Image (cartoon, rainbow, N blue to C red; front, top):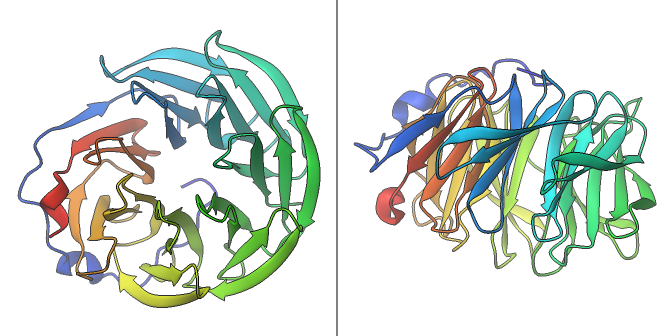
Length: 325
């Protein structure tokens, strides 16, 4: 697994989770580059994009046909990325070239490179759509967070962070930025206007994935070494519960209606599903391919897309809304 950590120890948890008896539909999109890690869905839900770490490419997929129909060369070792300008461009963090590559998706070519230095590894776009946040491992124990003006295509500010800032999520309500500090076992809350860290929240071991509910009240953090999900109260800025999931959880997604949270368990090769209101703390699961890393829930709140790094595939599953009850 690229850039990931060791196998966690709570091996018994996966056997305790109930499994969905069936899903309405499951299919696979194959040959999605080599070692795809991250995915994004177009605003209309008709297309999906994935970074291909092993081939330095951004892959475009026609979801109506379930096939790859677009391959765009980007910088070296692309990891996290985000869509902007109504899905017309992609901003791709290219770890080994130290740049954020801007891709014109309509014309399938690179239009600019924003030099950030270090080892950029994820990109998150603000709800208003004109600002991007780039996490950067840095070249020492100290990572960084870069703030990019998408319209002017330049870095406007850089903040020093803790160890191994893996990814970030932006509150749709307050626009505070929640940054995963994988080496510090914390989530840092950043005020992007004042350029200050307003709080540091302790979570589980080796946090990796993060998602925020649409109402901005809860933050879910997947902890890949302690095999659990930390739930943070965004208003109180403190953890409220820790929920066991599968082995080596990475990606997290909340359904657009805010009702369910989905957690990718890489070593278990499955996805845990929980009600976001925490009415039950017992997750159900469904199987995916080898090496799952990232997940998205479609606008219908039931179509789930999981990218599988070790299988070079995307699993598309239909999980009905009542499946987590």
